[in-house]
Length: 206
Image 1 (cartoon, one colour):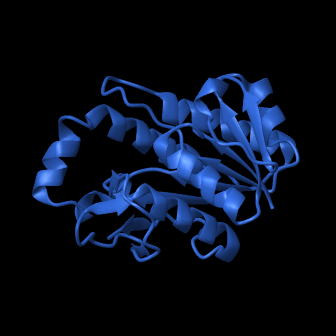
Image 2 (image 1 turned 135 degrees about the vertical axis):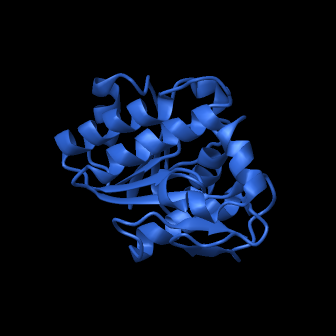
């Protein structure tokens, strides 16, 4: 299977790329700065471009079997990177007739807000408010598309090793409100194989 990863140099994106190559996928990593890609592999193609450049995005999507969107930013201020970037990805997918999309969002977005603890709701409503608003808009764009989409909503991301043991489902309660990025990547690639959550937005947590 051929797939393209947007946000490939982020921590979650790097895990997706690494595990996908290990599983035998042909991976295109769409990046703004190729110097941030340290992994070398015969089935890895690096494509440099701007997520807001529809021509570059469409070129990366051409002839792919699936698209993974792991766009994000470490900045806490107001941002539209996820929502606007995802809208461009969807436009390019429609242009190139590629239908399978998996998007990394966050636990607490949309109807999953009710699954958060009081402390986490306070955290989202203050420090992470801008990121949450961008994720909300991003999910609307995805759900309004005609694509075969899946939205993955991880709880608090950690850089701990892959366990392969986690809970995933719609509006589940996270036992620890933590999940390894490696496990999120594992779940995304499993979803591409199983198609268990097409047109659904499951939460993944430990």
